[in-house]
Amino acid sequence: MEWRPKEQHQGTGTYRNGIGQELGVYDDLLDCVHDGFAEYGVIEYRFSKKAPRTYQFLVDRYSHTALGPAGYSTSAFLGGALGQLWREELVAGFWAPATGYWSYNGRVGAYGPADTPESDVCLSWEEFAVSTLGAGAYDWPPLGHRAEER
Image 1 (cartoon, rainbow, N blue to C red):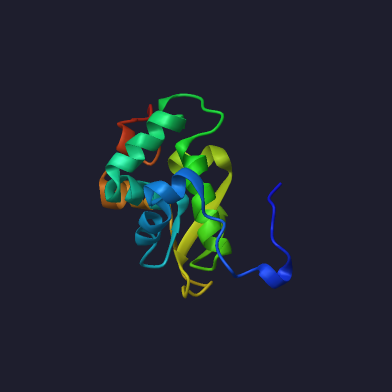
Image 2 (cartoon, rainbow, N blue to C red):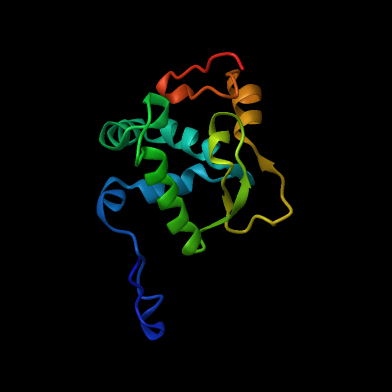
């Protein structure tokens, strides 16, 4: 449950706080949302390259499914921050089919710049991993995770 101010007080601030705000996660994530819609995994990958020290700090603190089962993970943390940016209308978003490494989720958020048309094509993790990174669709390169052949 999240506390929200009464209507007359909405718009006087954001709901950003805590470690995400202290580490600059929101601003770094905004820099990772560009060139149309992209599936969540693409955004997390970009974040891992944009802010590698922050990403490693979050992985050390919250773990990651690429390292083994995790109740709450770096991906959950970053996904929550992206959701906040979506609520603030700083990014556009929708639910998309999860591909490749992220397919265990069934669906994930897809994000684009706030002015991205809804009909815009969404860059999937699978396409990005294979075409741009030359990695396997089920790999998670930022943490050196290589999937077994499927």
